[in-house]
Amino acid sequence: MKYFPLIWANLTRHKRRTVLTTASVALALFLFASLRSVVTTLDAGARVGSESRMIVQSAKAIVFFLPMSYKERLAAVPGVAAVTWADWFGGVYQDPKNFFASFAADAESYLEMYRSDLELPADQKLAFLRERTACIVGQHLLDKFGWRLGQDVTLQGTIFQGDWTFTIRGVYRAVNPAFSEDALVFHYSVIYERYPQWANPGWYVLQLRDPALAPQVAAAVDSMFKNSADPTKTGTERAFNANFMTMWGNVSFLMDSIGMAVVFAILLVAANSMMLSARERTNEVGVLKAVGFTDRQLFGLVMTEASIIALGGAVLGLGAAKALYRPSGFSAMGFLPGFDVTVGTLALGLGIAALLALASGLVPAISAARLSAVQALRHVE
Image 1 (cartoon, rainbow, N blue to C red):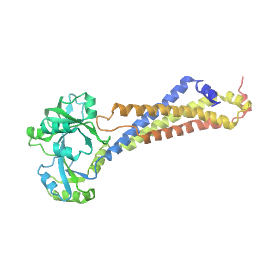
Image 2 (image 1 turned 120 degrees about the horizontal axis):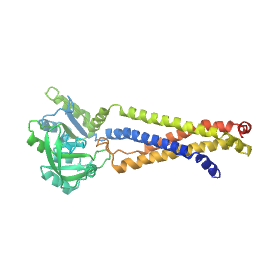
Image 3 (image 1 turned 90 degrees about the vertical axis):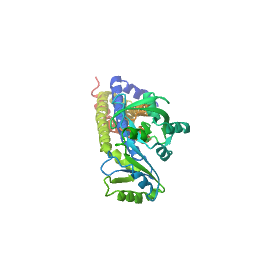
């Protein structure tokens, strides 16, 4: 601590340079944390889902419907305990920018199958089940638009054309943060009444008696419909979610590459700043050595200055990312539910800051330590 006044004097000698360098480090690590969090959120989303539930979809593509007649046949497959189904609705609220997940589902069986994943008050569940035009929404979606229980919400259909008005009778909370709270679910029968020719499930969900039966059930289901007009593709819910995430492409590589490129660019800025500072203090180094400062002490002083800038910027940048996203409920329009800066990302960011301090301060510190007092004092006027 006795050297702190000297370190502080050096840092504040060029206040603007110190502030800008620290801000650059903070911005770099804020961007790194943000981009890295996209990767960790996608990874978490890919792991959402139960191994004891299976998704049956069209083998052609997820956008193709499956016949309603499949329900009874799926329920009869050995190892299947329950069956429900749902369909993507694709509505928007007031403005095309207000897009979020909306599903038509077989309400009672859907809620029963997902009772361990969604927290929905019993009275709200009953109100939803007994009212044909009722819907349930996620807590985050409710907060985002300022809705309230009992309010009528009108969606403009994109797949199923027209205006569709639903009454909010329930608000659910996700047990797992990676399970989206940005969805609206309503009764499948509403679509069937208006578009009976189109009203077929987009996918079925099977509840297994034993997760170990998943391979046998998948093989049995796909074999059953192999030669039909609507063949199926069956897999676990977790595998389905993981495959859905691959639709983003190789986002992990892209985000990591951009993040590291930003950090490397800031490394050059910080290193240049530290080297410039060291060159400006050649005379000072000579004086310090003349009055008894050792090479080790000078090395430590320069490295401490570099560490304060790098780690100070890291604390600001990483802290801002952590404080911003989770409290604000950011979810990228529901595509990144549970978006948050993880402890692992914070630790990685601090590690990068430590390497940044080492890389930017090492050369100036070694130069200051090796510089002889005689050579340094030659420049004294």
